[in-house]
Length: 194
Image (cartoon, rainbow, N blue to C red):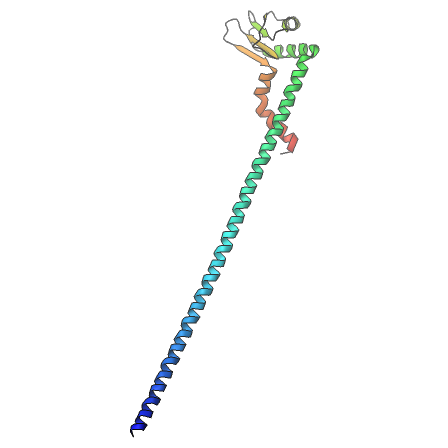
């Protein structure tokens, strides 16, 4: 009976051991399955985050490239506009070197300068070498002005009233400077149809 009891105990111990091992295997499989699900979620989440980071990096790079391209385009347009104005200034200078054109330009600039101003006793300053052309323009416009040559005046006229309260400088450079902002948008429109 002792050996039957031992066999019975051994059999119960084996059953208990198998049950414990089975439970342990089942629990291990559950833990392993949970770990696999967690790992898969981590991998999926990491992939999504990396893809999102990659997309954001691409977007940032594209935006930076777009901004740089726009800056380069603006710089090129600015240089082109500057070249237009430099050429216009050179052409105007060349035109003012032609004596016939210079007389016509001087007469025109003087005619504009005297509009709305009391000219009696006024002084007209012109570039060196233009005194005779200025006197001729005064006669043509029926003006009695004191004409002086001044190295401070270039490419036009400076009219000062007798009381010196009003000074009108009407030179090619001053006119170009005053109209530059309006001309820039018109020139840009012509160049780029913007």
